[in-house]
Length: 263
Ligand SMILES: NC(=O)c1ccc[n+]([C@@H]2O[C@H](COP(=O)([O-])OP(=O)(O)OC[C@H]3O[C@@H](n4cnc5c(N)ncnc54)[C@H](OP(=O)(O)O)[C@@H]3O)[C@@H](O)[C@H]2O)c1
Image 1 (cartoon, helix red, strand yellow):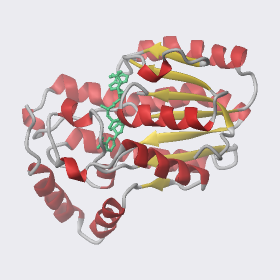
Image 2 (cartoon, protein in one colour; image 1 turned 60 degrees about the horizontal axis):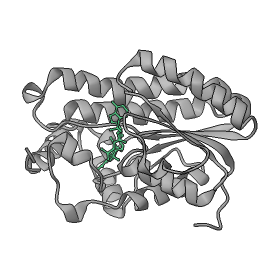
Image 3 (cartoon, helix red, strand yellow; image 1 turned 90 degrees about the horizontal axis):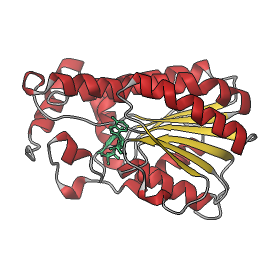
Image 4 (cartoon, helix red, strand yellow; image 1 turned 180 degrees about the vertical axis):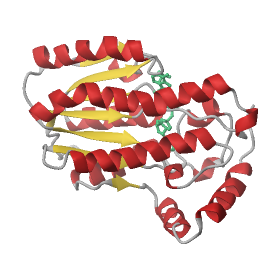
């Protein structure tokens, strides 16, 4: 891992305080001690303690006005502290809520759309002029559930379908602009995600977040459009493509319904 070279001089990441985002930070800091990193989340990443060139911007991404406030500060910091080199944007923040839609909290569902969808579009839109100018890349964290409708996580699944489709589409829009774009579609991964979402899939089925990040990075370096970490996840998603959509949705619901509620 240490032999690899990070061709990005600066990284802007969301959700570096936990799970997959924290693993991305560890991975990137292992690749380069010189990289400048800006993190947006509500909590400061523990990893940032005592680290130079690691800047935390406290930001609740469900609030558009906070994104508008923070991004100019980030852009200015990038221009002042790291005026040259490619910029990598990792849209990772996100959360889910388990349960039949009618039993979920509507305000939480709307917040989820704000964080998982609106903030991704908003942050990307605001950062893109500088990324295009200097060259760079974007990794958007979707999910394996983005490939089909997901009963008992209807809104979450739909937000991740949006992220997958949108990422693949902007990848084409940006094809001649020197910006590499990847959608990362993890399956069940070890993180705080399930505690917040209120359900608990078997611990054995959870892939380590470090492994997910390794796979993501290889795919990003190879300029893939999307990547599904884990052989089992890949196979399940491929098989799903052979089923009619309504039947696939039924099966997906039967699988997700088995996960017991953790609260
Ligand atoms: N774990 C899985 O099985 C799995 C599978 C597929 C996809 N994913 C996706 O992977 C991404 C990372 O999730 P994770 O599994 O690492 O879960 P996690 O450990 O719960 O981390 C979620 C991250 O999102 C941030 N976040 C949540 N709400 C936010 C808000 N309102 N504003 C700013 N940041 C917010 C959190 O930061 P703060 O709390 O500090 O704000 C945290 O750093 C998510 O997009 C998730 O949908 C996860």
